Every structure is written in C-alpha cells, then in structure tokens.
Amino acid sequence: KSIQVSTTINGDPVEFLCTPDEPLLDVLRNRLGLTGAKEGCGTGDCGACSVTVNGRLVCSCLVLGVEAEGAQIETIEGMAQGETLHPLQRHFIEKAALQCGVCTPGILVAAKSLLEKNASPTDEEVRYWLAGNLCRCTGYDKIIEAVQSAAA
Ligand code: FES
Ligand code: FES
Image 1 (cartoon, protein in one colour):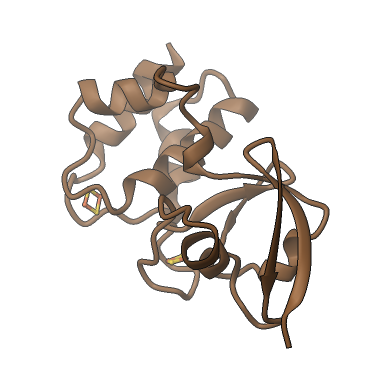
Image 2 (tube, rainbow, N blue to C red):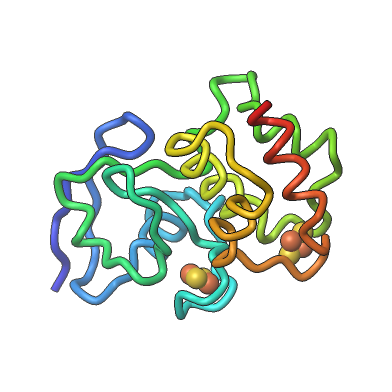
C-alpha cells in the first residue's frame, strides 16, 4: 500500500506516494525525476546517492522515502542558483575534478555540507569528510584541490 508523504525538496513543497519500504533514492529518481543522486551500490558504501535531510548528510539509499515526511531535503539539483553554478561546481569544472561523473553529485553535496560546517578545512579534513564518497576515476587529488579552491 502506498503512503502519501509531504516534504520540502530544495525549498519547494513536494508531495509523493511511495511504498513503506521504498528508499528515498528511488523516490527521488523514479517518482520525482531528480536523477542527480546516483545509485552506485545501494548499500551505503559509495556515497553517490548523498543528499541532506534536515541539514544532515545522508546516503539516500539508506533512508526511506516515508522518512522525508515534514523534512527539508537538499539534493544536487538545488545547488546551482538558476544559471549560476555553486562555487564548488565551478571549481570542480576548472580543476577537472571529475571524469565519468557518477560520483560527482554525491561528492558535491558532501563537500557543500563540509564547507557549511568548516569553511577552511585542511586537506586531511576534506579527505576525512569525503571518505564515504568513492570515486573510481580521478584518484581524489583533484577533488581535494577543487574543494580547497572553492573554500579559499
Ligand atoms: Fe547509496 Fe552507494 S548508492 S551509498
Ligand atoms: Fe568517475 Fe568519480 S569521476 S567515479
């Protein structure tokens, strides 16, 4: 049986129906057309599905859609303001901090969450914070550089 959920996504009120066992990631991608969050593993290991729920960074594959009731959710789709990219997005492009791009939405959401808590992180702090976000392409150094450039 489907359950009606009322939530806020990227500042907009949103209502959707989902089954009680349906992951938030599936709701975002399949019911709401927000395909920025990716399913890399579906088991909380890769971070490609990262979003924030009430300001807290989570793997949306591990959160149920019904847990979105009354919550404030931010996804990668809310990061740019219209045509204006977020500084993190700009620096990821400028530093070539992405290749296939599958990890990128999750890493951007995670990095934004870090910079909101710590505006001047050390390299070690960036690496520690992003330890749950796997990238099979870049070797990470450019990602760290891009986050640091955006923070500067
Ligand atoms: Fe959620 Fe990998 S898809 S952590
Ligand atoms: Fe391909 Fe990170 S750019 S997984």
